[in-house]
Length: 227
Length: 247
Ligand SMILES: Nc1ncnc2c1ncn2[C@@H]1O[C@H](COP(=O)(O)OP(=O)(O)OP(=O)(O)O)[C@@H](O)[C@H]1O
Ligand SMILES: [Mg+2]
Image (cartoon, rainbow over all chains, first blue to last red; front, side):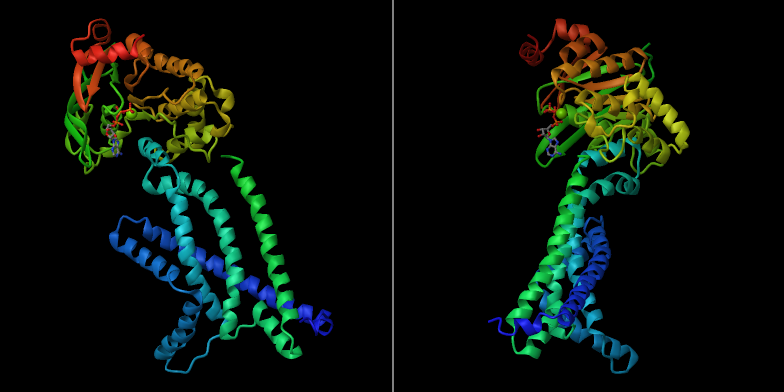
């Protein structure tokens, strides 16, 4: 099974996998950040007074969470060049990584929308009432009282979302991006042996996810201290 | 000390939650310096009456007047009128993300536009009144229930309200902490604050209140000066209620 392990387990190949791992990590991190912006917008829509904005927020969340991420990647992969071409009139081929980031950001945004919304809704309504009786406006209450409390509830699940994104970034190997998953495949094809590179990729994935979840546990403890 | 100018006037307010009529055509009046206790069995609508006065709940029918002025959401003095009232909650509702000092200054700075130094000075003055000056840099989670409620009272007082509304301020407290909170309220009463207090503390109602309003099923069943109410209740329902809560 691991017939070519000795040939594969070289410094150069490990560097190759490491590069893939860093790309996966980078794509996940950028997607998380852009996704957080979408999440803030989405959550603002979902808790808005306006029914229309709430409908948009719901539509976004339900569509994204109700369809496979792989399908979303494929659609974006096909749709973006068509849109760009229709504007510029020129054939267009976008960078695989950018497509991956766009798709993953949109996907992650739907999940963080829900995380942020439930974080805000989880703040005791007595806090709103106390602010109301003190004369604070809606936005002052949100900014000074509710969001700081919601933040603590939001951080731990956002870290889990980051871990999910690192794993799910493997899906963009299907459109040709050379991240960790694809790097392993390339090594497998080179040596006609896939088990060794796949298992090595697993080690790299685990190194990233376990480190982050360890960090998350520490952070959670810190955040819980003042409750 | 009680004068004849009306601080709160409630006219025929009704509030429903779905089919349930929580407050049913209630009218009442509170003069400057007066202390009124709202009592009645659980679910009788005491909290809802108090919350309607402060517009935490909007009554569906009827009007609330503060110092003779109609409390109306569409009116431009709406928030100014609401600010004349301080509200103390059963569960304190302190802001856990701020220190005691932060709790006491945030609205002063944001709403009254006091500068920070002035706000802190005023906060300290009220912390001294509730005897918690040394806790100014603590977070609320480090305080006992009684201390939390005293901070919450101080927080309201920092906004210089003319009326204080209390919704069962001691019901969430361990018995040994009830006294310290009632003592603060007693002092406020002595200073001439106009107060409306929902409470199960009959001893407090008896000794501090000028007047008692007894509610049941959302309606005012009996209203009398405190002494007459406790010594000589007029209605059977008030008699029955008192026989259950006084031992
Ligand atoms: N937000 C709400 N939604 C639905 N029903 C409510 C709500 N608030 C109060 N009620 C109902 O209205 C009635 C009056 O409630 P309220 O809280 O005013 O009573 P209370 O006299 O303060 O009781 P307690 O002594 O238990 O605090 C109750 O039947 C209660 O179930
Ligand atoms: Mg109540």
